[in-house]
Structure formats: structure tokens, C-alpha cells
Amino acid sequence: MFNTLRISSISLRKDLYSLNKLSNVKRMSISNKPHNNNLFKNHSQCNFSKNNESSDHDHDCSNEHHDNINCDFIMDLLKKNRNWVDKVKANDPDYFKRLSSPQKPTTLIVSCSDSRILLNEITETHPGEIFSHRNIGNIVNAIDFNIQSVIQFAVEILKVKQIIVMGHTDCGAIKAALTMNYKGLIDHWLKCIRMVIEKFKTELDGLQGAQLERKLTELVIKEQVLNLCELPIIQKAWNNGQELFIHGCLFEVETGLIRDLKVVSDWNKVKEIYTLSKKL
Ligand SMILES: [Zn+2]
Image (cartoon, rainbow, N blue to C red; front, side, top):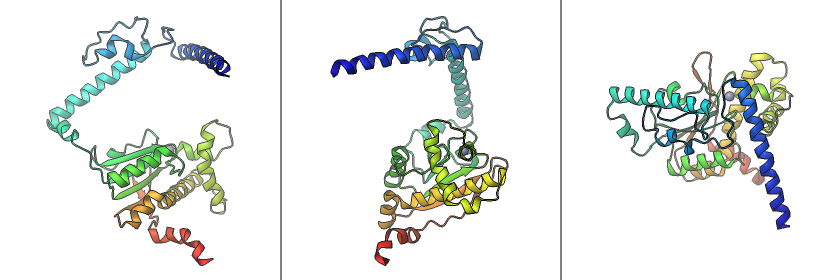
């Protein structure tokens, strides 16, 4: 038994090795740049990474443990980071001193992973003011340990007073959920959105294009607010008299405006669901 497992493990490693090789070949064809085909490219192994305190590029990219493409990328990223640090310090010398103090956010925002949603920027808040969780389609899933852990930490430790589910227009997750093409693993996640389609089929029937996407986006946000309200963490907080408000908002990428969907989220509404047996 043990030997069989060991053989499987070795054969799996071989498969991964072959896959990695293939992936390198693919990347080469895309980038059309000279490429070092070493399988174990890792910045932790390279001098540049060890000396990244220096703004100079003191690393030899031809090193066998290095990847020219990634090196350029990291070089550029670190350079921009240093520029940013310099600008911030020039404008506000105590900025990083303040940033080093413990965070005290009063708001948790659950938003989509979309790269256009810059939470601090669109709400004119500063680092430390918003605790956040992001996933594809801003889904509040009761069996997702990731978001559940974030919510528990936010509610029980940080004692945030506001939780916002923030969806957005032109959302790829919404578009994907409305199509039938098999996409693989992500289809399991999109099921959360497809369940909303199923639930509100009558409301969505007859709508098309942007109108359909917007309506579905709003419904998904509202459903995630309800999902939040039903979570044991939230129920416990409310039962203990903790001040905690939950909102559903839509960020319009085309206008930059945040719309409050005015989702009613008080505990009494949810309690009706959980005390139904008393009426039966
Ligand atoms: Zn999105």
C-alpha cells in the first residue's frame, strides 16, 4: 500500500514536471523573449531578491536560477514602489509611522476581485479604515472558510460596525453565470450566482443585455446581504446587542458612483426564518 502510494506520488511529480515544462514553452511562445528554461525559477534563490533593498539592479539575469521576464516585472514593481514611498514621505513624513499602528477599521467590505474596484479610492478612505474580503462575484458563501474567517475576525475582534456587500456593473462573474459555456472549476463558484437566477427567474425573464446584467447584479448583492444576515456569527452579534449594520451597494464602473440598494437587513426579518417552526 505504502509503496503504491509512493509510486503514485513519484509519477504525479513527473506529471507536474512535464506540465511545468509545457507551461514554460507556452510562456516563451507568448512572450517571444529569450527564456531560461530552468524549472526551479524562484526569486528566493536569486541574489537580486536577497538584495532587493537596493534600488539598483545588481543581479545577473543570465543566472541559471532566474527568469528574465519575472525579473523585469519585479524590478519594475519595486522601482514603482520606491517611487511611491518617496512621494508619500515627501508629502507626509509621518505617514508610515501612523500606518504601523494597529488597524482600527469600522467597516468590512465584501467586494468582487475585479481590478477596477479600488476600495479606498472610491470611498475616499485611508489605509486602515476598511477591512476587506474579495472574491469573484462578491459572494457570501456559508461554507467558504475564507470569507467566514474574515467575517468572524471583523465582527468579533475588530468589532466593525458596518458591513457592505459591494457588487459592481460590468461584472465578469455575472456575465459568465449567464452563459452556458463550460469554464471548469469556476463553474462551481458561479453556481452561487446561478442559484439567484433560478430564484428570481420571473423577475429576470424578458430582460436582456446590460439591463439583465444589472438586474442580476443587484439581486446577487441583495441575496448576499441576506446570506450575511443568516450567518451564525452575525446572529450571535445581534443577539448580544452588538451594533452592526449590513448594507448592499452597487459600484457603477461607468460613473464611479456607489448606489445604495437599500437592502433591509435587520435581525427581525431574519428571525422570522429561524423561528418559523414556532408558527407551524
Ligand atoms: Zn466582478
